[in-house]
Image 1 (tube, one colour):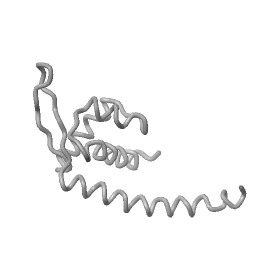
Image 2 (cartoon, rainbow, N blue to C red; image 1 turned 135 degrees about the vertical axis):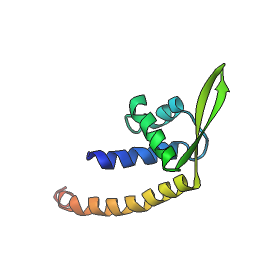
Image 3 (cartoon, helix red, strand yellow; image 1 turned 180 degrees about the vertical axis):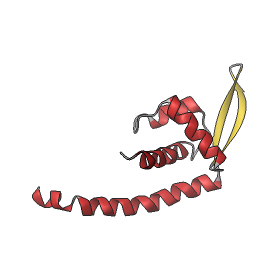
Image 4 (tube, rainbow, N blue to C red; image 1 turned 90 degrees about the vertical axis):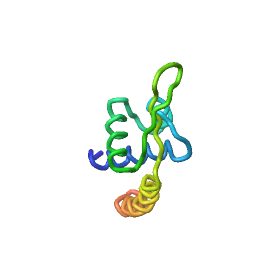
Length: 106
């Protein structure tokens, strides 16, 4: 998959994982992993990029004697998910067009 497309998809996956509830890095990985492979070395740059883009905010809270960063989606982050859904409809239409010959052969 083209790297820019995958990056955009992972960004939306991360936002979707915190859409309903604030979360932290390890939990985000656990939530996304059944659907797409993601590692800590991939996740944390995404989280920093989303924060710098004002798509999420970060707060620190103590958990078992250690500070843990919790991520919260912003209105802009929610808008990005909605925009992705609209974009995906167009992508699916393109996919249908590209695979139309294959479907005729089946």
